[in-house]
Image (cartoon, rainbow, N blue to C red; front, side, top):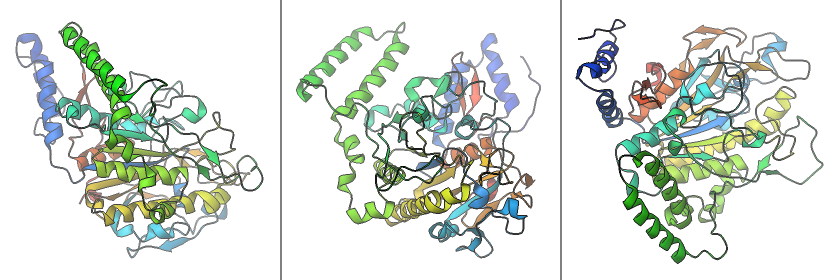
Length: 482
């Protein structure tokens, strides 16, 4: 027998890493083969009890200045502390920024992390979605990167063979694929090495700004409007539903002839892609989830009829329909649509942008989403996560903005599985570096997996069959778990 040296620390499943390595090595000697080991890992990873059935991830692209939101430093020098003051929340002793008054009322349902950090470079979206910290040599995704949390959820559904039982996917990403607005594909939200068939269902969007008033100068506050829509959601001219169903029947007959081991993998991927396309075109369940006209106008006004508000309302509709992982990104659109808009990348006019647009709009949507979930009995089974790919510099620059910073920033959770009124970690006196309890993006991913009932050490195979831990070695943040 081959014995592997290494840590004897056990996973949550009771199998030590040393034992897992030993089991994998037995394939060469006729023992447990790697596929069997992976199958056992998959079954354990999907069967653990979890507090959350669903996740809504609100992603603030560009790097939100969380020291102006959830980690204010009122006693810091003026060039650091900024223009905003802290306010009290529903939990005595916990304060957040004055421009988040509605969010402050939910602190008893929330957990703040004030010591998040990574060394993977600025605007690198890969760590926050996968836990994998690596400096990248380009801004486009690659199929060799690890899978996102949502893609792992989609992969687990495929492993459990429940995919054909429902039409909606387990992973939906709005309002467009990450990077569309800059004509790139930013890494992170994809399935990576487990295969494109586990990518999310991406919506499409035509963003625009309110046309009232003059065109804003670059770097000015801008409200972005628009509605996410399903891709290919209309039939081509001359194609009726009857003809579409006839094509489906023909395709199924051809597939029956092709199903053998030599082509099974390619057919399986083709079949899943085709099935998704047909479902989008013909499914009332899919279409109705995106039909905001079915919602009461008063509720729509509570969310606000912005792009971010519309996406967040649809996110609630999707989790209510059973979608397990929904991402809503507050995105930017420099190259696709010229609306002079920087999202959360506030190198200039940081305080004006946050005060006039970003924080009031976010505060309104966040409050509406949590109350909507709670009213419908969904908040206790839905984990709501807010994060960015990085933070902003402690020192304010000459343009009244904050620049890129990855050494200390914040994020927060609410809802299912969360011990409300919790603060994890502490930054130093200027919100520059971690003072206590550092937290990595991998720890955030592991926490989300844990709350979903997925083992963070679940092994997912890359293209060569090598197993990788889903959370990239992250550990759940036990202090904030209910």
